[in-house]
Image (cartoon, rainbow, N blue to C red; front, side):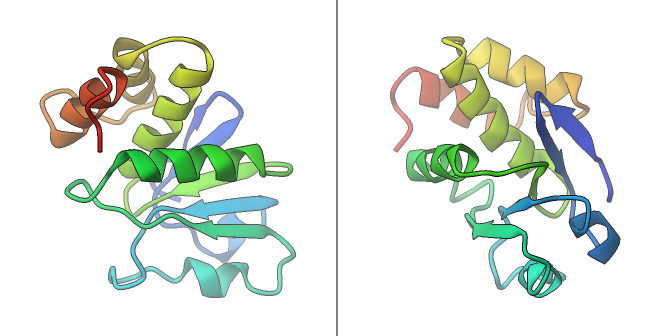
Length: 138
């Protein structure tokens, strides 16, 4: 899996293959169904892993996606993978949830993404994170 990294107990990364999926008991997919190469639902089918789809892009990311991610992570069992095409979307959503749970803010969420190898500074994701913690994310 490209760009695989850990954010606390959660693995984030790019599009997994069948061998990657087999390592997890919970798989959360941030890719829209229409995104080319999004085959995760088919890969998870029949494995017994929990599967949740929370589709968003950099342009569509909103507070409700973070709410859905929080709920999905709350319901996760065992080793958990959150993925998108390259990993950044997944890392942003997970880092926001984790920073919020820890009583931290935007700076910590951004630092967690970047420490895991996902550049968000100067990109739309940075603005979303800052707005989210400032209470302006919609």
